[in-house]
Image (cartoon, rainbow, N blue to C red; front, side, top):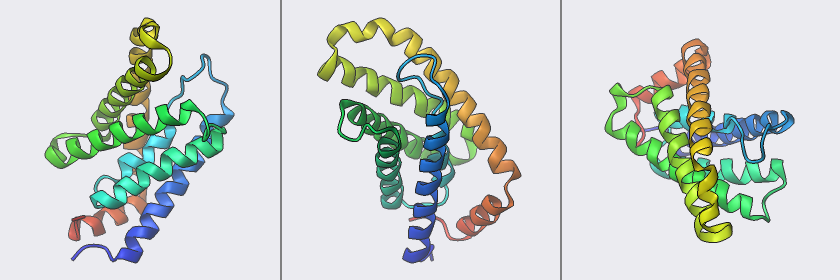
Amino acid sequence: MTHSRSRLMDITAFLGALSMFCATLEYLVPKPLPYLRLGLANIPLILALPLLPFRYYLLLILTKAAGQALVNGTLASYVFLFSLGGSAASGLAMYALFRLFRSAVSPVGLSTMGALVSNAVQLALSVWFIFGPSSLVIAPLFLIVGTASGLVVGLLTLAFVRSSTWYRSLHAHAADHPPA
């Protein structure tokens, strides 16, 4: 038996709100370059992997992307397309990696891989829809900084997972009742 539908919605809503909170914190910090951010709003996506079945995880990805766009004021811009594409691709990649290698992958590996996938998709969208091949000029820096950001977010997530009694109890309950 899995979590009840109501409990799954509660977890999804809480993690969605946490994602918006993280996006707000990140928005308050000045960026050294446009579009460069740490990606704190991805922490709830990583936390959700052992807790949510696929359709609730998809809802969380959409909530994260839309919430981030509302916080940043980019909902009606091409930046939202980039964010949604990157969030969807990285979220799906992290979900697949977690499901395939659950015991062999850590939040650090999941986050780093998710950052690489997100950045690759955002670069592809940039080339295809907005800036053309000139986007590739920033690709090396974008991928290096993105990978480093993914590593930092993964380390922060790992620290949270190890220290949070709330998450540990939620995770233990989910282990007894795994997502479908």
